[in-house]
Length: 200
Image (cartoon, rainbow, N blue to C red; front, side, top):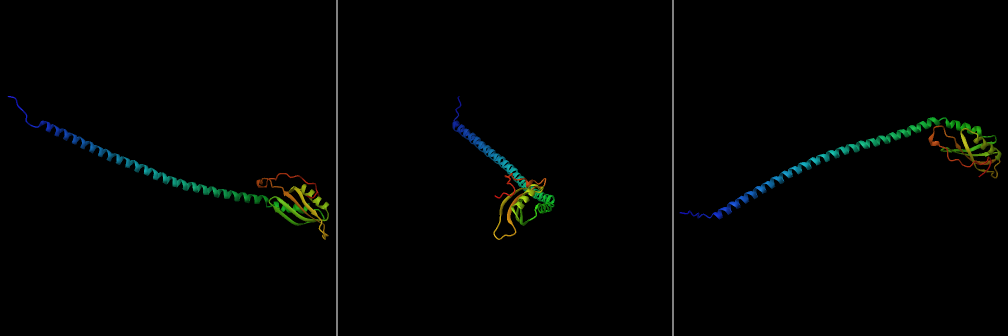
């Protein structure tokens, strides 16, 4: 005699499939949560590691900036020391120069001529004086041209003022010859030489 299954097998099969789907869905959800958590931890670890490297780089940059500033300060001090040494060296080389210059000026002055003012600006010399005649001024200029300490005499003016019984007033310019090795005293471009005794 045939056996008939009266149980609702289709309903049972549907429940089993639904249960399997729910289990698979739960497993997938749990796997996704675990993967997201692991990714979160991994990214946080990478971010913390990069942040640590950034902090170390900032600290190294700060140290390098401080060292660069110290180097710049030392370089500035070095330049100041070099400038002072150059000034001291220049003064040592030229300390006897003033004596030679004044001695040379007195030897260049012809008889009947005297100075009322003598001014030096850098290597430029200005002579204000009085001469008995313009011939004395010309002699003075020739003496300057032949000097080993002064050169390029330039006469600005020779005039005889009313009531001046001492002679003719004159203004004369010349250049001091630089001491060998004095780079700051490079000669100026040559100017046209005026004949002795010729006024501007």
